[in-house]
Image (cartoon, rainbow, N blue to C red; front, side):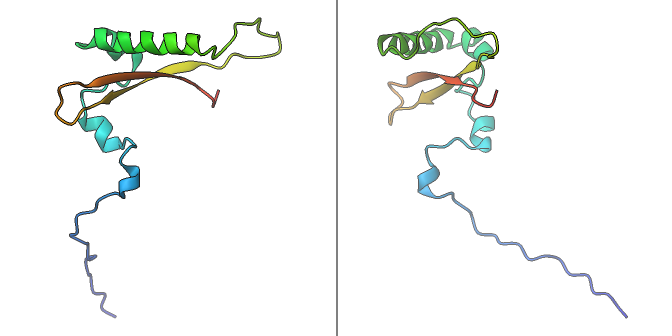
Length: 110
């Protein structure tokens, strides 16, 4: 019996994600977008470190103003939940007034 080898037919259509996902960052955007710092070290040592530090300071002042947390003694049988900074550069339409946003998020998985 003779076996015929055929190649798979692939679509040549350009795929676009749905508009509802425009606010989410994809892996491709993380790799190609060099303007957003992905870790704390890059934010405080990079060329735009002053803007990122100002964004972190603004966020900490907002958290303090809103009484987001209270400092308490940690019970002996409990572990602390860590946190990390997440950075986002909000671009304006004409790129004249970009906003540097920093968020402090809890590592809920720990």
